[in-house]
Length: 261
Image (cartoon, rainbow, N blue to C red; front, side):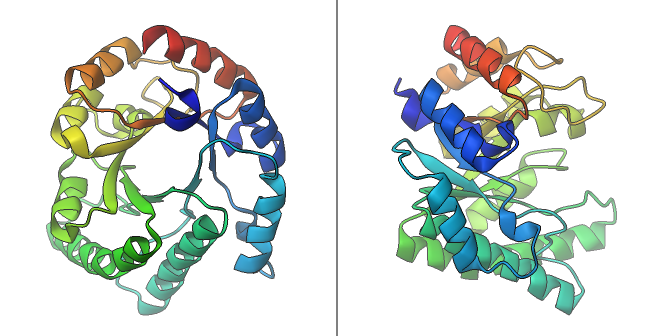
């Protein structure tokens, strides 16, 4: 396996994106750019952000993907003004991804896990409607969009979106740590079986089901040998992002990944 194409690290691994890029160069992986600087400065434009990231990525020849803006982003809410801001953040993320030559851009669902069935249905319908329009931009730019689970308790919401939008440029992302923390009645291997060949992108990290620790692959209750074995059994070949927030956890997880997969 060519790690530069299939194994990436999160830019949250170090204090700055530039430092994380240097780490990815050293260990010869790709990088997923996250926690964009545009979040922190209301006067920073998309164009400014692209320039900053292009500078950070200078000399980096491995694969790059982008984690879209996600804090408080709900593109399917009831409040029109808040929804407009959230959708703007998604379009800005798309422009940033295009500007740094990311081949894949990852988005959260923004679903807060309500148990009110009317709200659940309304959210799903609005979410699908937004993505049916939004995905056209990805098709024109030849970029893949992937949708990541957060609070979802089963794979069904993401599967319904995937089937309804029905575009070759929309794929599924699976965050194993989120399944472990929020989906207590399902296992990561069940999600892999449900997604099958449509599983394009995998965030891998671990926790003890009490906090979203983003710890190394062996520091938690997830069994990554079991997870990797299921991926092999399904004969699929997704990308893997080591989504840990310390260099120590990244280095340890690279060793674990290479040993188990």
